[in-house]
Figure 1 (cartoon, one colour):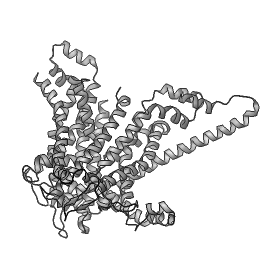
Figure 2 (figure 1 turned 30 degrees about the horizontal axis):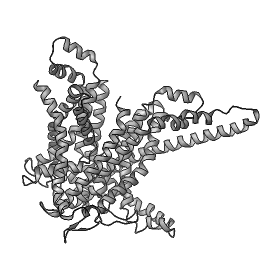
Figure 3 (figure 1 turned 90 degrees about the vertical axis):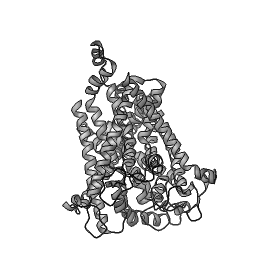
Length: 299
Length: 299
């Protein structure tokens, strides 16, 4: 159906008097083609310019405030030369724990989808829900954990932040795990089964090993995603201007500190927000590139 | 057996998780729903002193910013996807593709800061005065582009959202464009079609459903985006006809008003009710997106 339209526009057979019309039509078609191509190049350039603008702004504003005190001093009141130490440590703890909690669950769900459920109605439902959760607004995950852990237990806490991040990790790991397990050639599984291995041994010893690079990529992408999350932490770990490693207390984090500082009226706080923004972006993008590298190495 | 049971349980856990999110958000919002009834959905009130709350303004802001963002993002994302699949030289595809994907990895709080410190001043200085002056005296456009050029507001928020969803839409479009069997395209080139004609008459008709799915995916992202919007939306609970006017989205009002909402208050309940509404909206959008995308990306 669509082909016929193209053919009509493209081929112009007929007597010589149509020759001029054909030439004109041909020129117009190629002009339109050129115009569209130019617009597409322009769109790509615009997209890349946005990325360049964000990165250059971060580097330009962030480097100006980068110093050793940022890494050695806690957040302090404005005007007292504070740093971001507690925020950095808080982000590392919450990201690590969130990943540690979320990864095994995501791995098992992915295993269920690829090895056990496959295309059963239950598995299709799980796959669907997991994909929806993958793009669900992260602020709602924060509200959910607030309702689940913060309000009943009477206070904001680092562990609540970890749980919120873990909920975000799960669907990311599910997606990559399932995709990677499905790529494993059947002959590998058959070989394992032929040797008399039970199914769980086949999965753990053969499939996980074969899919290792892909699974690692998924975990790294999840780390990169949650390290920069702000919204779910606002209602869970809240942020803490003091040094605290206790998981039952409110815990500081880099994104929440950036949020508080960037919106403040103090120049040194805004400066620190830029430094934090540079650190978190460099960290997130580095993990992202690393994840791609891991996947490419595996293929 | 234990392993299989654990995998099955993990699968069920995802379903339970979704159910728990819905139930807890609904229970949290129950106070507001039962107090105001269905009026809550259409009331534009937001008065913490008199304890009267309504969802109309944030819902309006969420929908308007997301749709404006899509209007700006879709053509650019399409251009990028077209460029990456048909136009770019092969050696350039991977770096440009990676750059676009990195744009998706930048944490949303960074977009917020970038929007507030870089885009908003540009809007206030150049773009908004230009539009206000150009459209002065033209009936409808005059109202649409009215008001003092603060730099922040609905249009700025939409612009930032557009930049954020471009990589998601572009990546999905690129993936679905690549599913078109090469023989279709080669046949079209063979009868003399230009690149744009192949795109318009072969690739787009073949992938139409999935392209809409990709756009819906971007919409789902834009609806729930919090931090980027919070910085530039202006936080005003009023429906303005001007695109330069301040406003609110569900996510931004939850993030901004939450700190002033004590546990158990009607205001907090109203925020949770808003969260529930946002979850329902984005669940529907994301579900449609999945249903449209599945047949093409899952073979």
